Length: 113
Length: 112
Picture 1 (cartoon, rainbow over the protein chains, first blue to last red):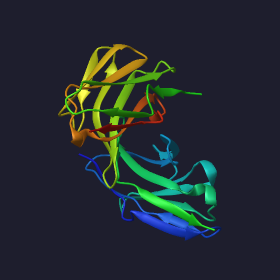
Picture 2 (cartoon, each protein chain N blue to C red):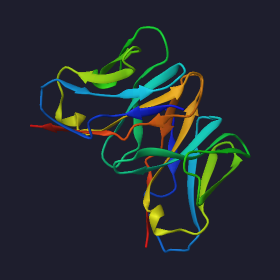
Picture 3 (cartoon, chains in turn cyan, brown):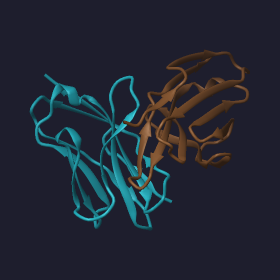
């Protein structure tokens, strides 16, 4: 089975500072990896995904993530955050070719003016 | 644009009531999912469906059932609501081959 650990439940950061949200996964098989964002009172929307190919994945809103197979990590980064990035971020994993996702417990990013 | 809609944003029910949560998607997706979201626990899969009338249990199916009579509609049923089912419920549909799940806005259910 797959599992996901998001090490930080809350991350406060000042506006225009860089941020990294950490995600580690556990799986005995090949995986697909995802980051979703949830703005207040909304459903989740996809930020980016890794299915295959380049390990550096670029997503929407200036976010990127790097798949590191040896460290089983898929950390999310943004070089300069905006107030509008305040949201909850979820890392998720699925077995390659499978439809089911396993989600982490989420990281609440708060951008401080 | 894919649209996933849920019948209610907020719902208050009494213990023991039968509760129906409806989800509709407009993209002809075959796969649909029901999750519950609780603080500190993330999203947990309750049930999913990969075709009309087909369903599979997720990680926490106890106390829930589902119905998929039409491709676009996936219903979650709480046969006898209990206070520990107070939660946010999220529906999603899956578009292949992108493996991206599209989420509805959620239903915040309170059982008193």
